[in-house]
Image (cartoon, rainbow, N blue to C red):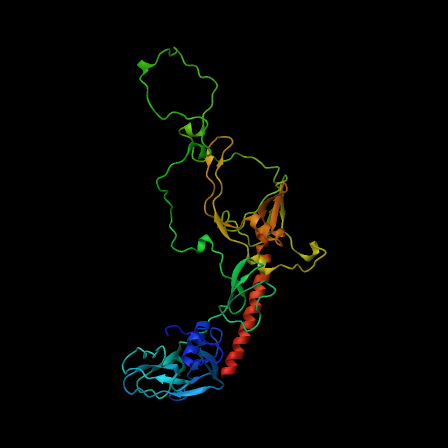
Length: 426
């Protein structure tokens, strides 16, 4: 019979059958989080030995469980260095999975290839060991880990119901609250699709020459209402009804038609009463004006605010100017959702000259509308006439404080966990 199906009641099923079934459920690997200690192989310089930590692993559908650290002897290399390999060896004939050392070829830097047959011996690599010529002990730096870890299952959850215990790095799932995929990075759940800003894209071209194409007349915006003829000449003899004299009439000239105009226009003496009160002056900080003769080292200096009416005022922050002082909760997750962008300012037609003024290109910043839509960060948004207008960039540092504080706490927690792991292995 060419078709076999199993397992069923009162049916004899072989270990080969079960192995074939179980390895479809789970791949070969160590049952631990990435970087964990299960079947971790290391050396501590105490003779020609390496040590393998206790652990649990699955090898080709068979399970192996070790409850204590095992010590493996490494054969001396003599005058020629070599590279050995530590493996978990599945032997279906012996009904066992054991630790073994595959001895490399003298003088070669290539470790021996593990045996991996479908129904016979299958060797799962744990680490390579560089055995130096004439050495009498194996140094910690001579061991290089090769463990692979069993796959994580894929799940689906909400933010409040996603897994919180026995999490392994790489665990993947769909969050129905955020409508996105997320994975466990060893510390926190992280969005699978990270935000990418233009500045972080590698290999982008410096310019984007357009390919040959056409545009419908109706699709063209900002086209002129009239079309001044291109430069040309007309023979005087061909002109008819020309007047005898040519008194100039009232007329105007577009800015682009004026020749020999100056390149700069130094302002004449004047004041701006709508911005400064009579007698007020603005000091220039060192490095802004006359950097070699006018310094900002003496006196008191303030950051300046400009009100919507154009009035200048200094930005004060002392307790004596404030009341009703309370803690202000800022959600770090909301702050992290802010999207840095690069953009171009829109071109604008000068109302006086009719000249098209190109907007500034390649500016970097945030979009006030997106920050407003996040919710919880409205205090960063400036409004004018009931519409979103600008951002309080001077308050971004305040918004980032809880993010930095949380990361500082996470670093402290990780350092503590690392210290515990190092203490456990010593």
